[in-house]
Image (tube, rainbow, N blue to C red; front, side, top):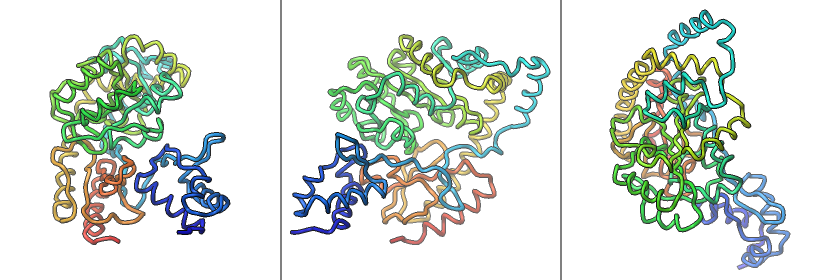
Length: 421
């Protein structure tokens, strides 16, 4: 059959991208190959390619061909009630305690309160975090949040890291965008599919990015059996586990971390911004001893040092017991809001979710087609390239104040109760 219209050709390619025939980062057939398939001239296919480029679906790489673009991470609210952000409502943070600590630092240290910290971080904060999280101080460095930690991994392991890195499916969109993710292993209820993982390790995989305690977006946790099995594989195949510890503070579990089970093969990252307030751009990173110098040099070349005053402030905040009190308050509020949100979802028959989810959000499945934009949540396809992901969405519920949350629940009831085309 002759398919000469360039818009028709563009529509078919667009559908193949949406259905996962051509995944992000994949090379698509050439203009010549499509011209043969659609029985048209090459100029017609060229016009279809230009249309898809304008839509941001494909990109041309000189001398290589055309590739499916990675989707840009969506930032900011998509509706008046925003259930997207997985940061905390700033009003939950005890700003008065930080204010007192700031004033005391300036009284005690004068101008020295503004002095820079070493590239690896303020020694006092490193010591406080080492004690609080039971981590080795001599392998730790302070970073400007988890995203910088991932960026340092990319710098240390080189330009072809997208081919060497394995991801969970689904996974954190920021990691997908940064690393141009190509290789995935599907998740089961207790962790990755080990058979699939072993098959992937036969290739040149050097790193495995994982959120094993409170996974984003699913909220699930790895079983100890899976953690031990993956730790053995890391040693046998000599790859590194990037353990992104998002919200373990809100998961009642004594299960060892990867950093405990196989420290020589684990790069551990934690954001303090997500458990305190987003404006505190601090986090920590623990790396194997043989990689420490490489990571420290990469960090020094990036920003020399994170903000020294904020590091000293956070050190006092932890040592004076304010962090634990803050986390207790957040945990109580989190449980209340999760219960309220779950009751709303329970009354909507086409929605289901897995029990035992933790963290600041709910990962929900819909048996009906999802509504078109704008929607007040994060779509499943932001976390996965598989067609099945389009049946899921993530509702985050901790970044708004109590009044907005309650009004947002009423909005969700109305929005979700009516089928959408």
